[in-house]
Amino acid sequence: MYEVTVEGRFAAAHNLRGYAGDCERLHGHNWRVRAAVRTEQIAADGMAVDFRDLKSALAAVLDELDHRYLNKDVPAFAEGKDNPTTENLARMIFERLGAVGRLPANVRVERVTVWESPGCSASFFQD
Image (tube, rainbow, N blue to C red; front, side, top):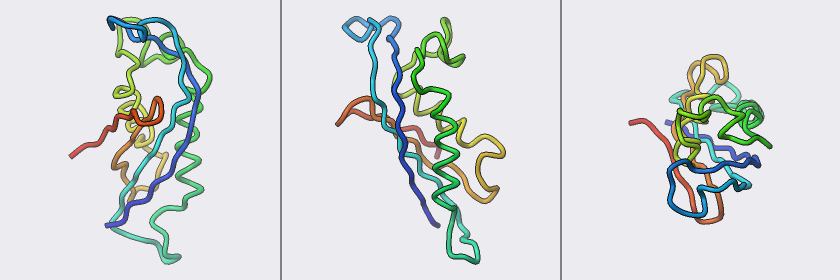
């Protein structure tokens, strides 16, 4: 089994609905994202997946979030839907990155980790 990881970044604002504390108010983060993918096969060129292709796929997902107010501008977090927590961002990025056509058929997303600040992260993965 081979695992390949890339990182990306985006800046966005959010507020946590129903949170008793400062984070209930509008605030922003410079988010860091690490995506790990797995495959059992490598191609004839010796690569599991081209870093350039994986970085491009992650960048396309993060572009949907960059410089946005997550609670209003991102349908997954619009009022009445999921709270834009770091955990829910990790899941959403995992699902979007794994959408059909973003990655080669033999490659699957293994884990997405999102940092909202240094030392504070959440990951999403499936067993």
